[in-house]
Length: 284
Image 1 (cartoon, rainbow, N blue to C red):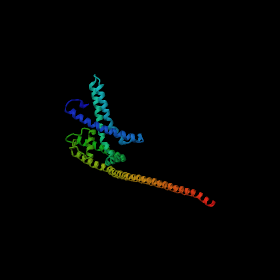
Image 2 (cartoon, helix red, strand yellow; image 1 turned 45 degrees about the vertical axis):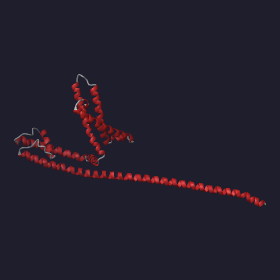
Image 3 (cartoon, rainbow, N blue to C red; image 1 turned 135 degrees about the vertical axis):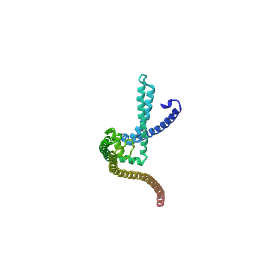
Image 4 (cartoon, helix red, strand yellow; image 1 turned 180 degrees about the vertical axis):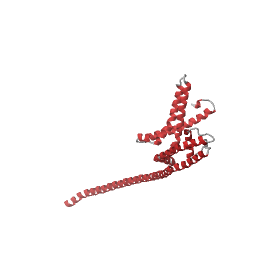
């Protein structure tokens, strides 16, 4: 690990490593508890947010394993090539830590709406990509022809190199690294910019309406869930009160039956005591 070396950087890396270890441990514990609690394990592992959790957690443990193996079992002959390969693997795994940000989608309504919109608007995104590819294939040869034949300065060396300029122009980014100098090239650039604005506006309107509709649906679901919790609490309270009333009524019934039986026993005892007295009076 980087903190094994001496110096100021090693202490900083060690602090970052400790912080990352605490965070990954907390995320791992939370994931394991949710995995143990769920009823359907397969459905749990197929959920997109849970897949993101796995992809975000596993690189840390894989990095520890690869680091330990690279230190202990490193070959002596091809040390440089081996270290380069291990370093490439570690860089790729550490780059996967950006998926920690996607965990915010579990608690963010906006990110959930964005994911739902992307899932519902796959056809619109496909149309947008198709429009851009067609326009890029149309304007790239035109600007290359205009600049190579009539331009004072040749910045467009090939048609595939002009694809980058077409994408940047149609999306109105305009880095300025490739600029047409001739008047025909500038006319082509103007037409590509205008066509890019129009072509991107067609699917974006449908995507925007889908986004707003998805946001309203998720907001209503959250409001229904928040309403359902107090209702469930009230229902449990009412059930408890009904159960207590039933127990009270049963207790009162038992008390009444015991009192009635006691009175009946007393009356029977009194009657049994009066029978010999009546017999004595009759004999006398």
